[in-house]
Image (tube, rainbow, N blue to C red; front, side):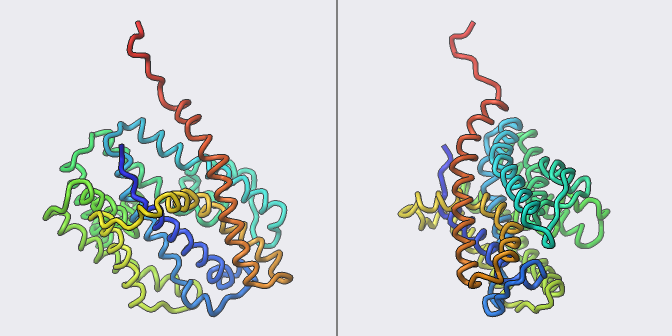
Amino acid sequence: MTERLYELDGLRFLAALCVVFFHYTFSGWAGGTSPVEFPVEGTWSKYGYLGVDLFFAISGFVVLMSAWGRGPRAFVVSRVVRLYPAYWVGIALTAVVTLTLGAGVFTVTPGQILANLTMFQAVADVPNVDVVYWTLWSEMRFYMLIFVLTCVGMTRARVMAFLWGWLALTFAVEAGLVPRVADLMVQAEFSHYFIAGMGLFLVHRFGLTWQLAALLPLCLGNAVYRALGFADAVGRRYGVSYDHAIIVGVVVAIFAVMALVAFRVIWGRAVGPWLETAGALTYPLYLLHAHIGFILFARLGGSVNRYVLLYGLVVVMCLAAYAVHRFVERPAAPALKGLLLPRREPANAT
């Protein structure tokens, strides 16, 4: 049985909160989707989008860990069970709130909703029902690569060769040595996090090797390079500036804290059940908070104290996330697994 790393649960929840506060106290009003301003809080919460970077590093670690020893079908079913039930509920709730309260803030169409239900709406260039869904398309492309690994069979040597190949293609895309269409799967903007997360899982499972000792610093260097460029682009979008030293510090901290997990510097067992619950809230919280929150800020911002509204919304979103986990994800998982996986015949069947 796979060892549960409670530290990753806590890190996932931290990453989700960073994104929530980025949206609620910075990008909402800076981007014109929320009338409630938080100029003081925005000086630090503007860095909260880096929670997505942490998400991707965790995903590299956790998805490889969950896929190890599984066949292609079992891996696909595990991802469907993990992603789709909460996602469908998130689309439904976001669409209902948008259609009933979102006039002047957001719009949504039936065709858009139907396309989004597949999670492949980006292929048809259909807008997301909620802005945060863009990361799910990045995750889906990563899962496709892991699926290929499950088809050929995972060994340490094969995964290591895959990581070197992916990193080499990342550099080739950045240098313009391959067609730009290749970046659809390479994802050079964030590939270093997935690669590093996978490499750190190998460290966790097998120990540090010279190849990993060479690979991980290269990933860190590329992560810093791309993060600085991305920060400048975000700054231009919102009309603010980002301190490059802080960006570098956060990226280094992401790698450092993931390395602590990989090297089994364990600090979460004492509060494991709490961290496990927090980790369970992460995905539905991420799915629900953005457009619904922006709409409620627009509707209530003129009549409710902004801090009461801010922290009230965070609490409400966490409670809604718990409800989705408790009443949707948990009961749906065994039902979907039973539907999608073949039944095992009894050992004495004739």
